[in-house]
Image (tube, rainbow, N blue to C red; front, side, top):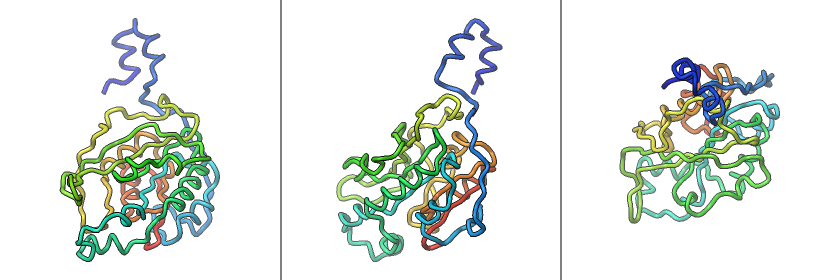
Length: 250
């Protein structure tokens, strides 16, 4: 991808047009340095309640958060007949999140994100169609994008079989891309097959790594207060970022 600087060198007459674009390949926003309590050890699998973790993080201190809720609403409506088998048994044994609790997590994340910081919220098809905007009422978060993850394997479904999940991209005010989002070749339909044996909600390492690289700087803290398989930690370390996250199961 040609950088803005390279474009200016090759096409000097386009200086005014290029500098006025909404795109950029460099970040100008910076996250502050933060002091953490001793029990919040970075780059480890913490076993604790995610809301407690969020309450101990400094306000407006991190540029990126991920949240992958275990949706209570989905399991209330599913009855495929295989919930007692293998991966489905593990899925159903996980702690469920009612929508009120998801809203609490999102409000907590909103408080610790820096201005123009991002929340990547994993979403299922049911809630995507039903609507979820009330989850971030009374926050400074707006929806700015949506990425479809093609898992390249059949899932469950009464009618169509599910092969996709959805990553809703939310940004804290002020909402902008220039100087904040620096990678512009991430496709809005992302094909990536993952392992399924580690965790029933395993998420795509490659996509999460690219999203982290797009909206943070090396050394920044990336948070995930409901970390599950801790794939976000692995993605953060791949991109030379620090990770703070936890899960009730550790």
